[in-house]
Image (cartoon, rainbow, N blue to C red; front, side, top):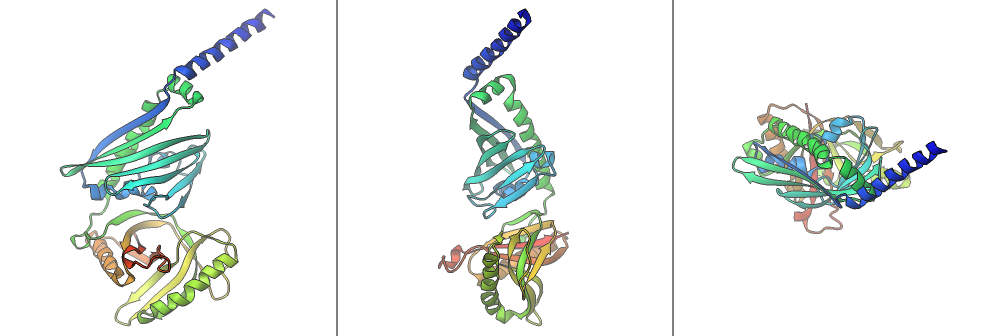
Length: 339
């Protein structure tokens, strides 16, 4: 009985200490680290504004290479982001909540496992002569349990160490990235890692003069098939270009949409599967008549950096002209694959 009383007193003491730590611990969590990278803000920005490119230098991506990532929204815009699930990194999601081009990105983090918690993170960049200062921070409110952990564990040191490792790798990634050719400076060319994808599409050999007719005929067919079969679309309608023969005025292409899950292509359609690959992308703004300039810029960039292009080329028509009459606001995502 005496032993049980002692054990009870010890447990009560631990509970009392926990309660005191819970009240005494910091109510806010704040972590911030920075680095200076020998590159212009334009060269650094694509790795901060894109949650896909964030994975190229994120310490958490390196920590858990087998984690499953699922992206949402238009990459690089407010509302876009990704969710993750891994044995080492747990489960959660990160969403872009605010962007100030070439200045800052704010995101919201929702951790689901191993514990439910939320925080806000930010990237900021400041020009410093020929270099760029990059600041990575995270803030959040500490609940009662988090206050206890904050007292017994140095959260700033632990998370800050991860931030430092990520920023160091960011500098390496930026310095190793191909430099844009002078002829393509009007377009922001963003290197990245294409994760692979499946597309329900209609293929064809088409005269360039008949492209509009080909798309207007087949996009509705594909969208109807996606809806009718209860498939989840992962992209807006897009063109998949395999060849572009200016001399003959012909192109080999497909009109389709990205889909996921078990897909059986209806009659007259194909399921196109593209493997993971290194990629270069341009977010083109404007009417379709001007998209050729973006392709020329990409071609110049690839040649200037001695890269090898791998077919096909993707053109995703993000903006629906039926809902946005102003063609200057139309967005087309152009993606090239390179070795």
